[in-house]
Image (cartoon, rainbow, N blue to C red):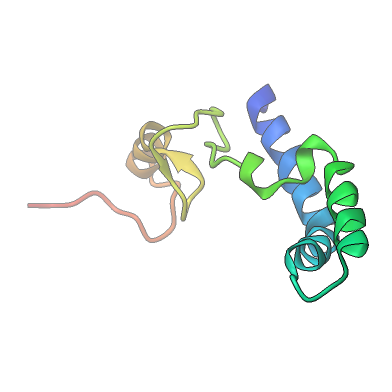
Length: 100
C-alpha cells in the first residue's frame, strides 16, 4: 500500500509535467526586458494564477516504498534502508552483495 507522501509526490510530479511548457513560456515573457511592460505584467499575473503543484521546486525526491524523503538513491527511487533490504533479497537488477 503506497504511503500518502508517495501519492502526493506523484501528484506533484504530474502537475509539474502538465504545466511545464506553459510556465516556461510565461517565465520567458515575464523576464524578457525587450518586451513592453504591460505584456510582461500580464505574464507575471498568469504565473501567479498557477496552482501549488505546478512549481518544479515543490518536487522532492522520495522513496517509492516508504515515502521517506532522506537518503534517497535516485537511480532506484529508494531510500538507503529499502535499497539495502531489496539488495540483500536480490530484488534489484545489477546489484549484488560484495564478497571480500
